[in-house]
Length: 553
Image 1 (cartoon, rainbow, N blue to C red):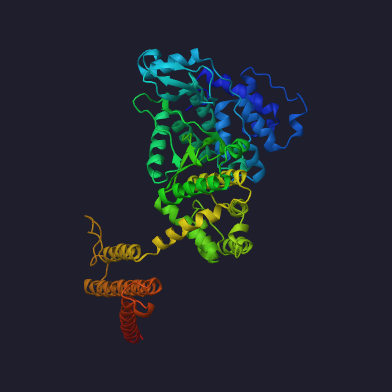
Image 2: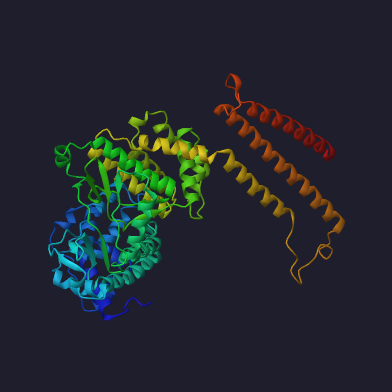
């Protein structure tokens, strides 16, 4: 698609270029080849101007530029704040300070959007709407209202024209990212094309309020076992892409510490409950609130927590959660090779110096190994891991990056409520349960069964395609081929037996450790029998292997 998609795109490009020039990024635009087209378009770019922006650091200048560029770029900065693997802490700190400078719109401007979404006049659904907004964001505006049935609700309205503005900005960003990747080695290391692609997906989801409603419902179902946690119900019948109507929740803002204390609420308990919910969402459900800052929580009587705003969520597949468990285990048990293997899987196909990576992981582990959980600084640990990722040119998967950013935000929230808050300590019971489940006999048996099926499948070659050379045509005696296949099948059969023996030994050991009944004198009889049987089986396998080795000598 051409950069100059419309005349509006060209005008917008001129505005953005002028802002970047103002904040001292003229050299970057010249290297991208953008200064000349902009000037030819009739825009006089002044390279002088006030000295104050030029006295700022690069990250601070970029933050001010993004704020001045408008809502799309503020959102971009918020996404960049999650990429702790690409940007150093001082840049992340500046991205986190981004403030949307959008002013509130008069409700009369929003009324047509509301009525179009409802398909009827506003008064037929709502008895009243408070025209003073409860909150203003770049995409939507929030107002309190009351339905004709007397129910107190909150309505979130997408601002008129915002989608067209964002789509125009996204077209420009897509083209600029490709220019940056093609023309600047320095900018290429930030992976601009991948970042913009991720941002495009995130912002497109945020524009559709029905997605946020589904997110809220899913998290509410996942956390229904926590009676002390509330997720507001969304009125799906009245909600649409541009309008969200949800239950009105009252409570004390989580950052209002004086009000919490005056109400006699238990701040340490609230912090622990918030961490418990967050860890369950991330590690057990694989679907988590990705922006757990204090503004998204209200505290209710009885130390109850109300969770708000589900526009930004993260998803972790079973495989990704398994990687997290393995990484945590490598730190707990001081196994840097296992941790390095997980990180090397994030190399995005680039060559990795694995020995050096193992050595660097060992340095990180040694700095945190053996510390009491109360002294383990999760922010420092994450900073060490992300610094290591940057040094080796690895790329954190976007879901992992979002999780790490959420954990950093959550720890700051917890320590705001309780200076002695320990995020890792709150994760320990759940992590122990996940580790037990990972190495449980049932899961091991299932994995061994799948592995066995793979081995059996590999023993049989697929049918030969028409016209493909056959065994005899390739010069290989079919009788030799049959003998090779028979040996392969026997070898794979013994591999399956070895896996089953290992499963028996592990299962017997777990039964002994867990004192599985019958267990006279505290010793599991079944565990002993399984261990003895596995030992006899392994002895027989060793004898068979030794005999075949002699045949090959």
